[in-house]
Image (cartoon, rainbow, N blue to C red; front, side, top):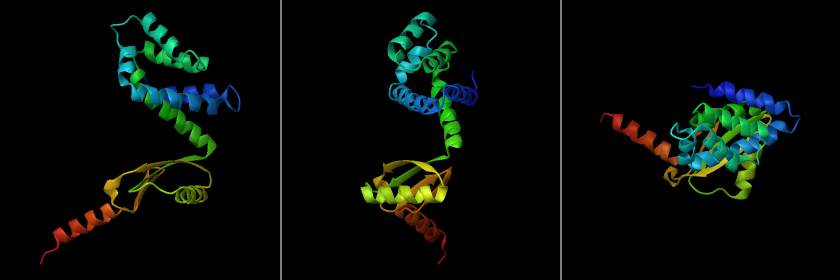
Amino acid sequence: MIAPEEYGAALYTLAKSEGENGPVNYLQTLRAIDSLFREQPEYGKLLDSPAIMTEKRLCLIDDAFGMCEQNILNFIKILCEKHALYQLHACVTAFVKRYNEEHSVTEATCVTAREMTQAQHEALYRRLCDITGGEVQLTVKVDPALIGGIVLLVNGRQLDGSVKTRLDTFRSRLAETIV
C-alpha cells in the first residue's frame, strides 16, 4: 500500500528540480497518462496483475510510455512494481494540488443546463479570476436535468443556482406545510 499524497508530492518536488518548466511539463504529461488509464481501466488492471511477471509488465510500460519524461516513466514503473497503478489518479491529484497551490491556480467546475456561449464562458472565467485573484482552471459541463441556471463548484464550495434545486426545495417545503 502506498501513500498517494506523498508520492504525488515527491514527484512534484522532482519536477521542480528540473527547472521552471518542469512542473508544467510533468502536469501535462501526467494528466494525459491519467486520462488514458481512466479511459482504459483494464490496462491498469493488467499492469497491476501479479499473474504477469514484473519484467513483462515493465516492458509493456516502456512500450506504451517510453516517449515520456524518464522520471515519469520511472514513477509509473514504481507504481507497477508495487502493484499500485490503481493509485495513479490519486497520485496525480496530489501532484495537481501542489502545483495549484504554488501557482495560485483555482480549479472550478461549472454545470449548466445548456451549453454556454463563448461570451458567457469568457465572462464567467474573468469573474472567477477577479474573485480568486489568480488563474482559474475552468471545466464546463452540461446537464439538462438542471432545467436552467448554474451550479458552480469552486475550492470545494458549491454554489447552486439551478432551477432544479429551487424546485426541489420548494417541493420539500410544500410537502412539510400543514394545511
